[in-house]
Length: 129
Image (cartoon, rainbow, N blue to C red):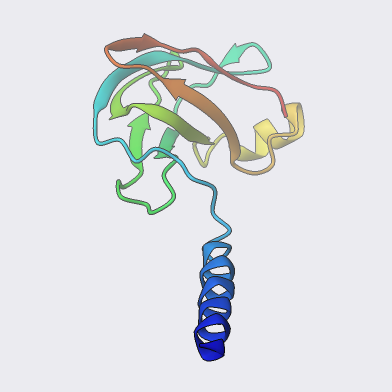
C-alpha cells in the first residue's frame, strides 16, 4: 500500500515538472487571415523614396512567411499581409543608405511593430532613429 503513495507522489512531481517545460517563445496568434494595408513611409517626417518594407507576422511557430512591399518614389506602399501584430522592417534603397545614415542616423534596417486589423488598413509608418 505504501508503494502506491510513493508512485503517486513521483507521478505528481513529474506532472508538475513537465508543466513548467516549454519554449521561451511567448504565445502569439498564428492567424492565416489577411488584410490590405496601405500608407506612407517617412524618416524624420520626409517620405522615403524607394526601398522596401518587410512585414513579418508575429507568430511563435513561424506558420506564415514574411511578405515584402515595395516603397514607391512618393513613399507610399500597398500590401496584403496577415492580420495581427507585424514587425515591419524598412530596407532603404542602396543608393540612399549612406545619405540616410549621415542625415538621420538610419545606419541599419529599422523595425517597428504595427497592428493589422481585418479589412482595409491605412497605416503611416514613421522611423525616427
